[in-house]
Image (cartoon, rainbow, N blue to C red; front, side, top):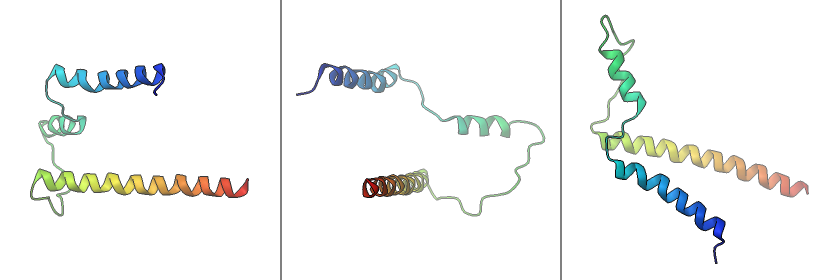
Amino acid sequence: MMSKRSVWMLACVALIVVVPLLMGGEFSGADGEAAALIETREGFTPWFDPIWEPPSGEIESLFFSLQAALGALVIGYAIGRARGRREARD
């Protein structure tokens, strides 16, 4: 059975997730807002053009997800290897 502390922590996490969703509004990142602000300035010229642009937002999201998964695998491997070395020493 879960302790009271675990139940309270789970309730707090649920509130943190649910409250912003109930408030509504648009969730957009600061990157897009900053890019839009910069592009509206006079005399703005990009330094370079992209070599390839994904055909859709879904493909872009896929690449972002793959990048995040690869990063998580590398970090998990490093942590597991360090822990294995420490346990082998002891």
